[in-house]
Length: 173
Image 1 (tube, rainbow, N blue to C red):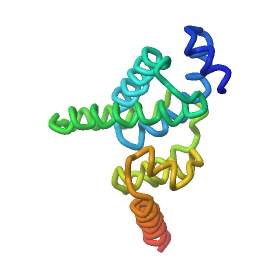
Image 2: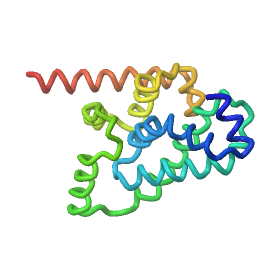
Image 3: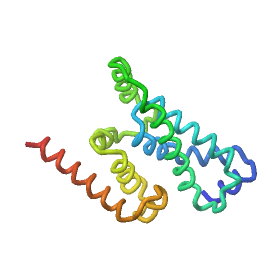
């Protein structure tokens, strides 16, 4: 991946496209932790790609490309979330969001149940669990990425796992 980053930094558009292609599903999963509307998720991922393309030359360490682009994505998702927080959602809009959720654009994303499990968690718990369990980031890496104390990340993981466990215990009774 580092070779592709170096090529992309030199202006190779095909190398950048290949980089994005390799991590597109990861970006989607992370955006979905913050945003529920399919259009917003796609906007966040697309805008992240544009920002990354324009700024890839500013990336100092080619081996930290994925962390760098995820940080851009998280910031973009937060911007979209905060912008839409004030928007009133009608009953019809919420039905449309369910249709979008059922018609995934990424066919390989077959872990839809995972998102249903995470639905009852708050954003901080969802993003921590997604980065830790799906993306295999260490607690230290997550804390740097989210600019949060390592102990806070551990607490979010623990609370999230407890909520998931309690949800399953209630559901199986």
